[in-house]
Structure formats: C-alpha cells, structure tokens
View 1: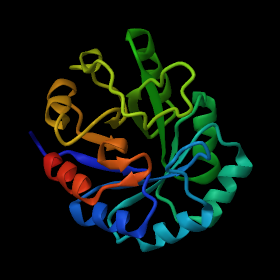
View 2: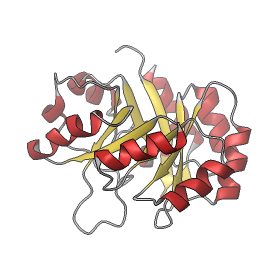
View 3: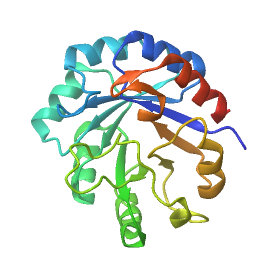
Length: 212
C-alpha cells in the first residue's frame, strides 16, 4: 500500500493536535456543529489552530452554516480549508469559495449508486470531495457515526478533483478500504476515539502508522 494522506477530524485538545501532527497527519479538522460531541468554540478552535505546527492543514467542518457563522469562524481561526458537511448545493459551495478565498472540501454521503452522481456535480464547484457514508435517517450527525458504506460502489472510479474516503475507518480496516477504493487520502474521526469526542493518542498513532 502506497502512503496515504490522512485527515484526523474532530480534534479538541492541544495534545490531540500534537499527536496528529507528530504522527504525520496531513490535515486536522475542527468541528463547528453544536450537536456533535466534537464541537469546539471559536476560542478553543483559535488556540488549537495556533498551536498547530507548520505543515498540517487546518480544516473547519461546518454543517449548512450561513454567512454570519462562516464569517465568525474565518475571522477568529487561522484556516487552510473549509469543509461543508451539510446539504450545501454546488452553487453554495461556489459562493463560499468566492467569499473567503479558501479551498472548499464538500462532503457527499453515499449509501447506494443513486448517490454517486452528486460526487461529479459537487466536483464542479469544490476543490476536494469527501466521500462519506450517508448518515442513517434521523441521525443527529451528518458524519462521524462510525459507519462505512459498500466500498465497491466507488472502486475504479475517477473524479475531476482530489477526493478523500471517510466513514468507519480504523487502523484495522484501512488497508482493505484503500485497496478496494484506490483512495490516496482518508479521513478518520470515531475510529481513533476511546469515547465519542475523546481522541485516543495510541489509536491516532496506530492509524497514521497503518496509513504509511
């Protein structure tokens, strides 16, 4: 398996940031979604972003956020990318890119083949695509549910933008996920936690080791 770039999402402490960076993560995600156990305040996020060493990209995860909410985040937190993880249309993705001048990653939830056309549609507007397991009906969170989808759905497919695989990944299943999908980037959150929102440094290190 060739080395895979990793985004560790939902970091909440400086220790989390330190272990992700020192283990070789390419990105880390800060969650701005009050319903999530990984949610951080603007002040927390600013401190975490400022504590990050050079070379790891700081990503703000938002869910159907309006301009006022995004303005506050971008003003308070030094960021490298915005992740839109709600029901944002390609038009909204393009608006956010233009408004902030930051790269935008758009999450697309996949449950079956009927979800795949969205990947191409969103690729026309976004800089990167996050292909995640679609949240179950009635789920409180759009992602970070520890669920994977049938990886065969995207095997051998190519899109016009860089993309990242998410959904239920752990150090144990990472190699199989990459082999089946051809992913060169992956996103992990619940798979490196000891409890919802509580990152485990040993699991982060193990995941990053598996990715190398």
